[in-house]
Length: 231
View 1 (cartoon, rainbow, N blue to C red):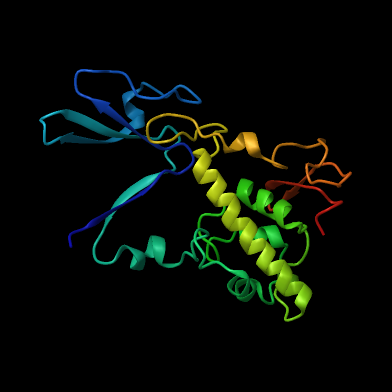
View 2 (cartoon, rainbow, N blue to C red; view 1 turned 180 degrees about the horizontal axis):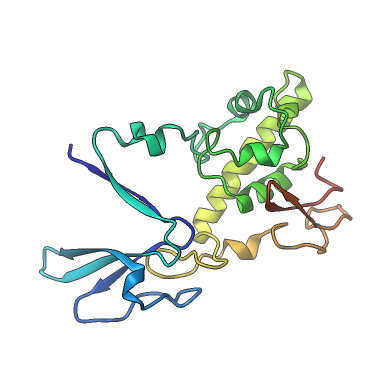
C-alpha cells in the first residue's frame, strides 16, 4: 500500500548482493565491474531474520539507469503508463498483433521496436523473432494486419515467434554481450542460440534455405536477416 520503487537498469546498470564480511561478488561477470565508489549509486543495507547483514548495490558506470518512488498504482506512473503490452504469455496473439500494426507503413522491425506497442522487445530479439517467423524486417508493418488468410497466418506466426524467442531467452538466462549479467553476476547464454544476430555472412540455419545472413542498418540499429527465406 506504500510507495513503489521503480528501477531501470539503463544500458550498463546492474544489482549485486554482497554479504557482510565478504568482499566477493557471487558469479562471474562478462566484464569486470568497476570498483570506483562513484559507480555505486544506491546501496540498500538489509538484515535477514537470522541476523545476516547484506548490501544490495546498484552499480551503473554509464548512468543511464534510474530509480524513483511512485505513489499509487505503478502502471499509472508517467514512466510506465505509455508502455505497450508485454511480449510474454498468451495475451500477445495474432489478432492483437495485427491490430497493433494495422495501417502502419513503417518497416516491420521498426514498428516492433516501438515500446508503445510492445514493451520490452529489443533489437536482438526482434531480429531473431522475424527470422523464426520468416518475415522480412523491411516489409511494411501493416502488411501482416490484413483480413486475408495469408496476413492472418503471418501475424499468428510472428506472435508465436516473439513469445518463443522471449521464453527461450529467459530460460537461457538472457544474452550476455557486453554489460548484461544476471542478479548473481552470472552470464546469460541465449547469445549462443542466435540464428541471425551478429552472424553476418554465415549460412542461414533454416533447413532447406541456401541463403546467408546479411546486416543492414534501420533507424540507426543493426538488423540481421536472411533475404532468401524472410519475405
